[in-house]
Image (cartoon, rainbow, N blue to C red):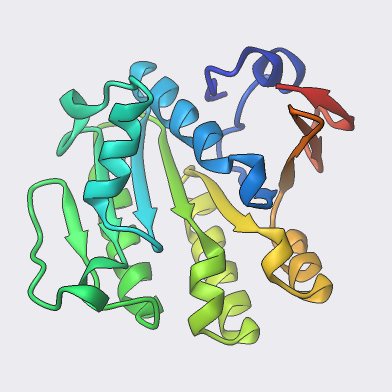
Length: 219
């Protein structure tokens, strides 16, 4: 079990199960990023390796956001934390790799993303420690790829990760997509973590997990 560092979630659910795939669903106001940044930091501190895929912003922005929340991850870069940047080359074609980031050619390159993810997973799994994949977010990929292509991509990526004993969390802005798209993606996951902001309170519920939380609960 991978602890998220969010006490109300960990106390209710236990954390993120190994070998499981999760959809983290909510609109922009739900602040999914804060949830996942805290979970990534907690995982790294617990000696879990993390592969973080950013699709809608450059790696530099992701790292700045961690820093702005006073979440110290710099010490893990290039060792237990590696990133895949799907965004930067669509703006700056000459953007290059470094020791902790693999640059892809854009959100249409799902094959490249699958290959890069598998390579990083294989490299990190050699250390014999748990690995957590984060894709932030599916919504950007869905803007560029048709849903059927995305379903096939997710089936392959989820299946490969689970066979390798790797946990995965996929972020999605549920309000950006048609209900049938949301429901099909949910059906490909082991569990769904739903977030929402209402009346100044951020709450969550979890379905499909061994410990479900079916009523909205404060974070």
